[in-house]
Length: 220
Image (cartoon, rainbow, N blue to C red; front, side, top):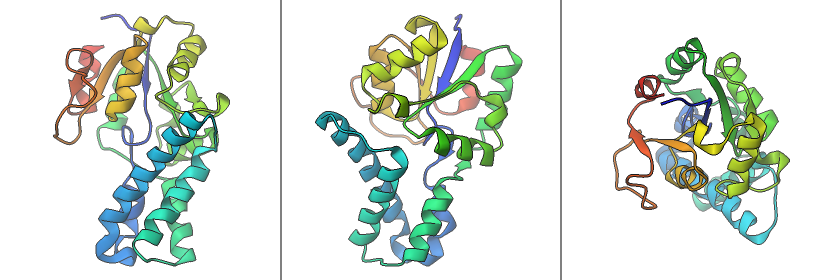
């Protein structure tokens, strides 16, 4: 397979979205896991709902609004903890397989970048904190378009930015809805399945499933 570039989703694929809550789990108590899951659920729901409504607010604002909902749902009113969680979200922990995979891809001469819902500022801070920014270029954000994945125009923007046809671009995501969007425009999609579970969006035969990023370099 000859691909001109490999793009990664950031949140949940390279960066552990639950690491923010994990750092403050003792302060959140027994609801920590449920809060983290609801935070993520609402964060994504808000991106989809706004896009369907033809509206846009930046990802960092939606992340804060989703956290407020999750905390309120579980009866937590602690402004200091809220701010600590949001600050921690900007410095999410990378998964253990990220750095060696990016190094291997860069060593092979591949162009390796990001295509994310995150704002440019969020992404730069997160990637610098994770010590992987030097292995990722370009960093492509939906913020320039003002609508969110999986709108096909997001993936089209990536192809235009890379000056490559979609079939020459590899895309890696742990989110099935994101993989679906990329596959529909013709990207070669690798669905990272960190957790077992049923398949979604009729993706069988349309994407290549992998269980770890370390499986990626031999495939591309």
